[in-house]
Image 1 (spheres, helix red, strand yellow):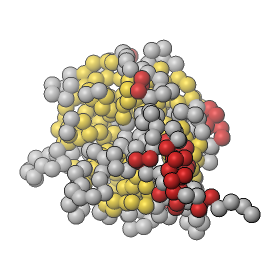
Image 2 (spheres, helix red, strand yellow):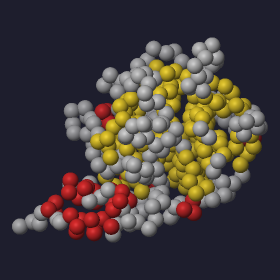
Image 3 (cartoon, rainbow, N blue to C red):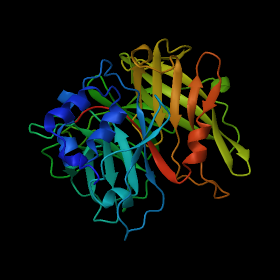
Image 4 (cartoon, rainbow, N blue to C red):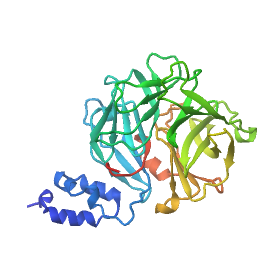
Length: 383
């Protein structure tokens, strides 16, 4: 007779849970069954090192609307392994045309289900925060002011870069906070292409294709004034803006790092034959008070995490086992197709000191059926 592992005594399960030092393994432990999950709350995670490297969260390509939802996975930078996490909250998670992350939370936005938008925590996906319905085609990126709480008062705000179904503009900024019945459009003075958004020192900031850093005032009540103001224009020297090939792509990211606002400029170059890859990053610090900016030569003991669908963030490398200091970790969106129909798999780490770039080749070769890699900062739901 096979043993009934789900009927193990609760005190034994808790004793086992207390001896698990890896959060990845702790998640796997809690995913076995209901009784094991009840023994795996935050309080029973007894690791001596709660500082955990960010994960890459993945979902499968081309989901079948009539099949069971695919279980998302996480890729651990600590041991370079894939782990299954608890089942997705709803079929719309697999069919959503936008899956994004910020501060460890996931946004799923779908235009197949009345433009449903929800926030959920990847370690507790059955707890969702439903956001107002939107008339949108896609959400490109979003940023949270703080980690949401499931219990009122919910003191957080969301700014999203999205494209409205009835708008001729390339994209727009939208704002929502708990208590509002609908999203508010953040009005800019002229149509621009927004590339990234971040919450910094109590305020949201965005960067656009014209290399302008913009301060946002989404709560402004004066309808006669715009909600976007220019903080800084990055008039970079020619040597710092070498994007001359029309097939090259410039990426701009906003990151809060140790009390400073950074603009990261990346070069994704076209090599021909359907091959476009990131080759270099440059970092600039912006003074939001006077608009001045300067090049950052070294990140010191910091590491930056950038993603096409993830809100960028910074960590202190020495606090995280296996993290490389003075480096930039990046993850491209698998869904992007070039002119030859080849999917990009641009994931790696860039060393600021010597300019060398290392890609996760083993990960790419084994998991080409996955898309939308998201950087997720591991945390428990109540943190």
